Amino acid sequence: MARAWEDKIRKVEPYTPGEQPKDESVIKLNTNENPYGVSPEVKKMAESLEMDILRKYPDPKAEELVKALADYHKVDESQVFVGVGSDDVLGMCFMTFFNSDKPILFPNITYSFYPVWAEMLRIPFKTIDLKPDFTIDINDYKQDNGGIVIANPNAPTAIYLDKAEIRILLEANKDSIVIVDEAYIDFAEDGASVLDLVDEFDNLIVVRTYSKSRSMAGLRIGYAISNKEIIKYLNDVKYSYNSYTMNYPSIKLGSAVIADEDYFRSVLAKIKNTREWFVSQIKEMGYIVLPSSANFVFASPAGISAKEVFEAAKENGIYFRYFNSPGIDNYLRITIGTDAEMERVVEFLKTL
Image 1: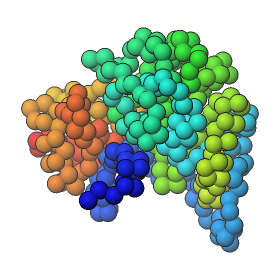
Image 2: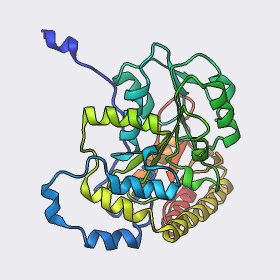
Image 3: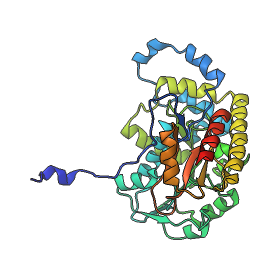
């Protein structure tokens, strides 16, 4: 028998995160985590953390972390917003800025959390088809809208949209908030970010995360950079929802890691080099591989279905990400691990 209160429940199809196996021997290449450990500066800071302070609430403004990020990116502190991973930051952006009757726009193949937030918050949305080569056509976004969200590089395709194209997109949508989700931008070429356009376009929000290039997915640190008015609106919503989003270890360790530029650059170089080697190896096996500017590749196997490869790999202790969705159901998203891990993966794929 139906219960009256059930009609009032907000029901959504939740986001499905990548599987987190308990077996430490697994080669885990399904959630785009960084295979290398945290910076030595983080380890040093972790050893000196004052544990007694955990009995107190953390700084609601996370001023130490905000200042570190502002100094690093050479922006004012009033231009920085921090949250519990970029998912928290993006969720706050959806909640704050997408409140019109017009649909927000994002690609039909992109980060699958976008439609979940839209459904949960009852935001009208419209997905825009990617071109046959999986790239974004910015001309498709020159239409009436209530906001735009672009992941750049896109996920799960790993394809990067040139900054000049994003400039055109911003010029054509000055009356809408445009969010550029740069979760993977550090793995693209230098100068790929659109952070330098924030002062030029007052409708631009750039979102970043520590989960990929900074090797700190377990601490959940994300941030946005925009103009001070946008950041004020975000903070107003944040403090109306949950004032204490950033915990003490995240504030301290997140501030420490941003200072260790040498380690950061060395890890990026390792991952990029391994990525290029791995791509060359699987292309020799006949795989179709989309051009990657991320710490993963999106590849379609030859002579066997992606689902079969996914299942066989899992049986052999190798975890990839498989999306059983139209248009990409014969592709695998494969995170770039260490050289040793990727060599083992190549040897396994050769057996298929």
